[in-house]
Length: 287
Image (cartoon, rainbow, N blue to C red; front, side, top):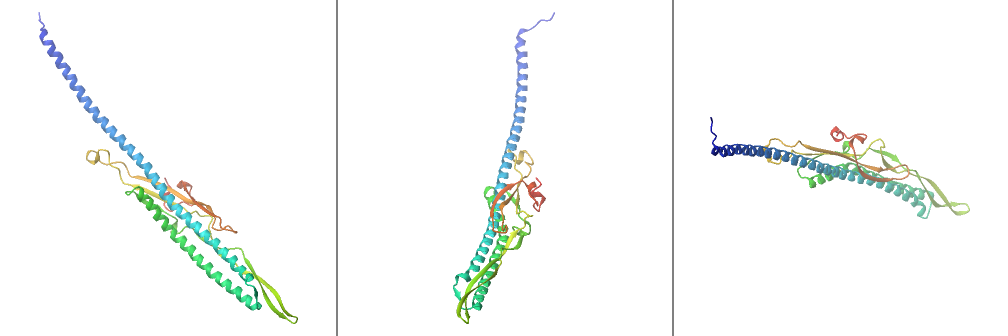
């Protein structure tokens, strides 16, 4: 017959309790590690998403700024058109405001002189328009890069302005013809009389924009990989490269519509897929 020893029972219960307590500690430690990794991944994902939103804002502001400069350039070309037409009307009206000429030949000489002065100024303003058309593209790229650099120094901005380094394909177009008139003295058998003479003064040479093309400004901003929350020693690699794209275009105006320049170009952000014709690089709109 076996005999139980009660004094040994507490020792056996204490040993079993210690084993269960050790298992809980190990399980708790393992769960802490797992939770830490999950928390680190969530924090890193939140950082990536937050930074992606920030990068999209940066590229939106950058291309919008570039498009604003493009719009100013187109409005400037339109203002030059209006100035050319104003000069045409002014010089065409000067012969009639100069008084009575001594003879028909002197009146015609004055008309030719005013016409020559106008043509010279017309050509000078057209050269200014060409310079605006060429220079504005560089100014737009500089403005976009300045905005991107101010908001994120590590961002790499790639710009796709209009091809051929110009705002638009400018087409030579004439304005409405203006006429002139003047009065002059003419000697007849009955004495001196006042006669009038009139004719066509000429047309202004203007620029208009090809209606089948658009002026646009596209860009992509790229940010290098973001490190994990616990640095690269514990985890290799990192979040993938972050790239954001945007396209803006000046719209809402005409350089010349036959009667006047209705230029009210304003920058608008657009989805790249809706730009027609599309930017030169597929990266600028296929996103």
